[in-house]
Amino acid sequence: KGKEKGKSKGKGKAKAEWRPKVEVEGLGRKKIAEMSMEVRDDNPYSRLMALKRMGVVENYEKIRTFSVLIVGIGGVGSVVAEMLTRCGIGKLLLFDYDKVELANMNRLFYRPEQSGMSKVDASLATLKGINPDVEFEAYNKNITTNENYEHLLGRIKNGGMDGKSP
Image (cartoon, rainbow, N blue to C red; front, top):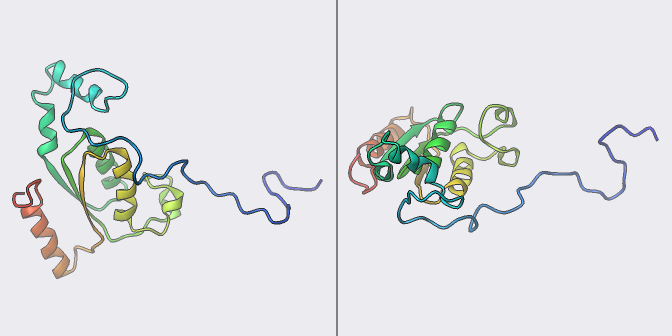
C-alpha cells in the first residue's frame, strides 16, 4: 500500500547491511609448504603449475622467492597485488596513504564494508584471505615526504624475502 519497492516501514527493523558469511581472519586454507603439480580441485596452484608441465615456465615454484613492492593500491596497484597474491608471489610490500571510498567500488577490488579503511589495511584483509602463503608488509605512508621516501628506499634495498636483499 503506497510503499516504494525495497523500502520498509516496519518498526524496529535494522537497516539491511551486507556482511561476509565468514570472517577472513583464522579461516580458509592453511599455508602450503610446497607447490604441487597434482591436478586437484583443492590445489590452488594446479592450474598455474600447468605452465611448467607445458614447458612455458621452467621453474614455477621460484615465484615464492620473489618480493614485489607496489606503490599505490588503487586502480592498477590493487589488481596487480591481487593477481600476484593469487599466483603465489613470495612477498608483497604495499605502500599507499589513501582511504577506501565508496566511489572506488566500481573499479577496485575493495568491498563496501571497507569504506573508510586505509587502502593498505583493506588490501591486507582481502589478500590474506585469498592466499595465506604470501608474506605481506603494508605501509600507510605518503612517500612524497622526505622521511617516508627514505623508508621506501630502505624497503627497496632490503625488502626481499630474507629482509636483507632487494
